[in-house]
Length: 163
Image (tube, rainbow, N blue to C red):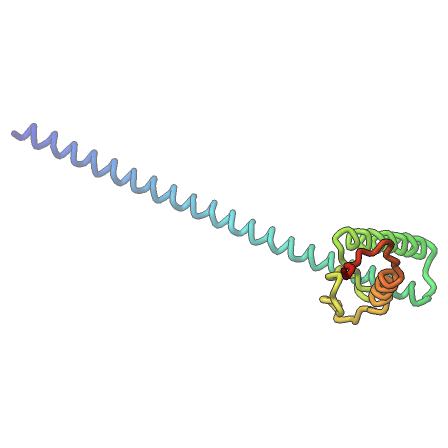
């Protein structure tokens, strides 16, 4: 029986060794997963911070551009390169205004002259800036329609005759 006991002891020792090796391997694998995951999370955080800073830079550059454009419109003398670009911007704004008005007309809306927002054709105030719409044009059109109706002559009116 000693030989059987020795074989069982060898098997048990082999199982212990294999289990320790498996546990050690699993621990190492878990550590590597944690390292890789934290590396991924760190890279994602860094990428996000980069995007936030780039967005802030874009906003500031746009603000600088608008500041220079506004100063140019106020008559501040600018280098020729900037004046040329400001003129191009003016042309684009004019084109944009024309297209917005066309779209509003196609949608049966009106455009606010103060802020450029499209509004319901019957609105009395702009829904964005609160500017009061000039209703005299609308009332003039209504008066013209009424005058046309009054000036209409009916030929051959059908009358009931008394017998």
